[in-house]
Length: 379
Image 1 (cartoon, rainbow, N blue to C red):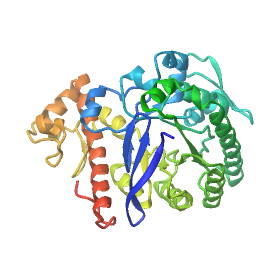
Image 2: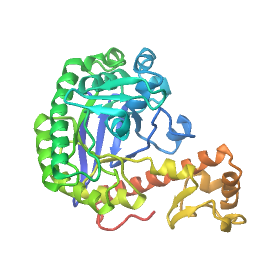
Image 3: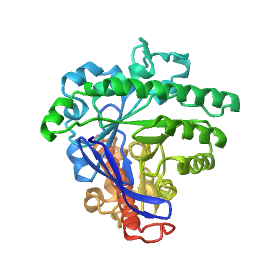
């Protein structure tokens, strides 16, 4: 079996581990930059390598619509397609279909939706979603779930959670029957002399109701997956609710499997989630904020659009070791952004990603060294 997860150290509830995948090892806790359409906007893959990105997240919904799963399959899978020979995780498309609330119709079989690109009609079920993810060939793929909206009544949240549980079983069944259809399966098998396969993660739902989260976690674990995600967060609820739902769910997930919280968070929040026992996180915030001139530093947020930086010769963050802070001044970064230069998006994104990765690296060092996880690492 090619996918495995091994705990190396713990410090309180915080964990440091290693995930082994067909395309390499991932040291956890880990932050996954979002490369929605097989691209982290504005940053080429060699730079992602250079700043230490271990694993990327791609979006099944978007790749399904363009360029199409069959195109990616024929080109050898998403790694070969995007020239990224490291691990990739694909989501199931459930969240994106959820966001198309006025363009979708949901029933027990699945979800019918219209493409946001051209209005064409499509259908995702647990089976067709898993077929797409298997065809794309990422190392880690997600069961198809229904993302519960916020706010939602208890009855609505239970209905959604029950649907997700039934879809989880169908996702697992389809995966077990078709997991040898991955584009790179035979090549990896020949190279390593043993079976190389994708990992399938289940997703916990339940809205903002602790008892539903606990029930969903228990039922998802009962099905049995390679890892477990907490979904349905960052959908408009207060931060305190997000924190509460993660705190309720994490203790119910197996200690020997990776734990993934989807779609979080700020630099301060990712440290807090690690302290709860989270191993994996992703969020569009560092890349999206960068494109709007909002930069994260060891001294807080910097809005590089501000006129106060027009003649500021200092680096963006004197404590940052990234190539942007080593070379460019705040004045220059402001000039690029004000001039609408494409380079501004690239440099801003490189810095923000580096900031997130540096935080996670320092947190991991803290866990491995056995220092108090209640003390925020120096950043």
